[in-house]
Image (cartoon, rainbow, N blue to C red; front, side):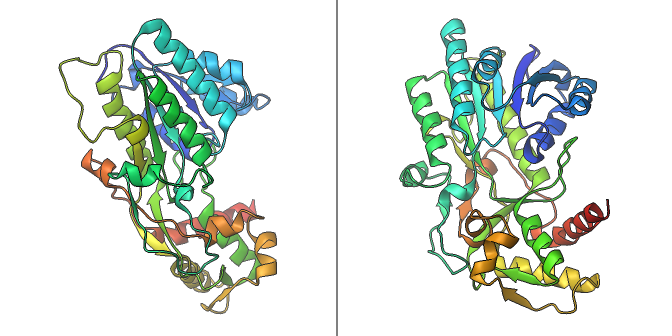
Length: 354
């Protein structure tokens, strides 16, 4: 690992994914050589002061702050983008613009780790069983053949085309599936999809699903996902960072640009299986009187879950295989999605009390 100071720009440090990555960076064996800048909205002095206490430099701005982000990226060896990154074009373009300016000035590679999501693979099946397609990141041609209209794809394409145009822009795109587990970040520690179903069940006193619940998704524990980001960070810095050795070849699996796709799954579930586990836990806790799982009436889905995003978030199908990360040495080992449901239920019940 580098002995030179490594400038890292992290977006989403106050969020679930970004916060967990921040904690992992701060606990990194080489953390004393990291100079971490975190993009954060102004007006929250408590969070700003907390970041300062962690020896992280707060950068006041938002995803719309083009000049601020561009300048920070220009001054960074590594950018890790997690703040609404899957769908936010302005911030992505600002990062790329800054990194391109850096390569023009230095003639040296820069590293861009972008967070997308396996929503890009989704089939809108409304709980019904979808196709048998499983996307594998060792087959980038399969991913590159996705329709441009798929969720997140517009942002992913900007990154890929930018890397095509600038060989010194070493970009990788990480695609988390459903993420579960309590985050390790200093602020938001709660995920999205699993709590959507639990909160609806607590409110309606029964566990429900969209349609028959036959559609499948992959899942990953937040700690295993943070490990994946750190593994990629370490190997990219070794290959392209300020102290990279020109005579050392990176692994052939450490691909970037048009082939730099990294799924991050460690399990698969149907939505029915997940709702059944929620029902089992709520019955055990005396919140409900039955472990029966029923389907949401179609006209009640959006009001009780996540608006129009509900069908996509907990009713679509998305199947992937994270072979590339495993080839690089990723070893996910945290408890399963089903074994984490009770922990999340307890956290949300406790949240309601406060």
